[in-house]
Image 1: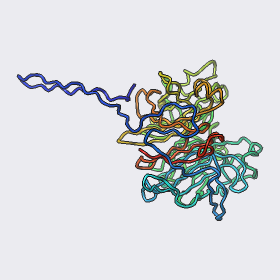
Image 2 (image 1 turned 90 degrees about the vertical axis):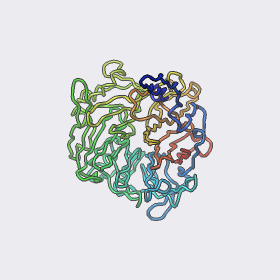
Image 3 (image 1 turned 135 degrees about the vertical axis):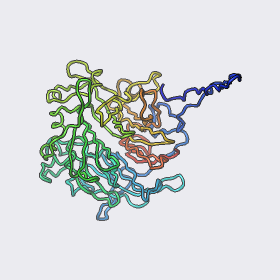
Image 4 (image 1 turned 180 degrees about the vertical axis):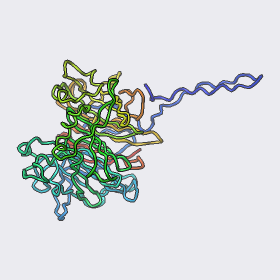
Length: 488
């Protein structure tokens, strides 16, 4: 198993003319991963399981904590906490803003229909994190509302880009998520959902909904430090990887949208330029596929390490790609091993992939599935973040299981209809990574999606959302909750 243990070190033989040969015995080295002792599998827990020496503080709870609207009124918060972003105040790793997405799509007379966002100040005193001030509700009404605020990213200039994962097909389909069906910004109301929205956490106000970034099932994004380039993922089957080049750094309202095309032995890859007219941007995925874009299976979160993009890909039990292939789309080359017959594929476990955005080369970084000893079953990777500790960068991966079958949970949990999701670490940049290289950092309480991991700049605190756990769990994990984990 690559990179699990340091190699035995043999010091060079010291040779001298006419002197006896000196040898140093090989010295066994300890496991080079000593950040935490990985936790064991557990398919029977109502609380979060963390490594020994780690602890958590509860920061933000669905309904139990009230949010303050711009007019000063207070109401119980929305649920489905997802993406979190820590924005330091004066560069501090112990005092900052915490922005939280709500992947909600329910009707709400008090806080507005559809999705949502909350921002609040947090502060670390000693080894404990607390909330400093009010939970501030983000009013998305000025941009026509949002639905299912899922992933997102921080921009280099301190704002948030929040991703709308929903892409309603008609006004009629809005009825359970959004009641206002009037046209907005020159679009049918259902077409006003499925974009990226910029928020200023310092003022708790919306900057704008960026139509130039295309409409599709926005899952996550990554901004380059120069504020010029934005990579965006699409949680659909088929999914397309998009890139946006801003005309002016840190201004994502104007620029050029592209779709990714993989380099293969038969053909050079490319970033395919897409039309920037609004009627085309509303159908961004379709326009990309008609131009030969590479398609994937439900891309989730995205990070860049060492110039390479790392993307979690949930996968999907059996699916048919006749239609997108007929349009001109081309499945990523590694899907050949998942082809059953014709254009029917089966990819139940998903993976993390690595993409070189300059050479257009794609490879599975770590495939989902069981480990050789059966003590790990890595499936449906979703949330993704990164942290650098002692010069090594790790990908931190959260699961969101699509099903309980095929060993994704224990037989007992499957029989009871229970689901458990885990959080794993793996070093970035390995040549032949496998499930064996994963380190299990945590097991979420029954039913929850573990998501929204985010670290303070010093790497000593990890924020995490426990989304939609089973309501029968004991407190505090019977509702969506955001926690701060310390002990690093």
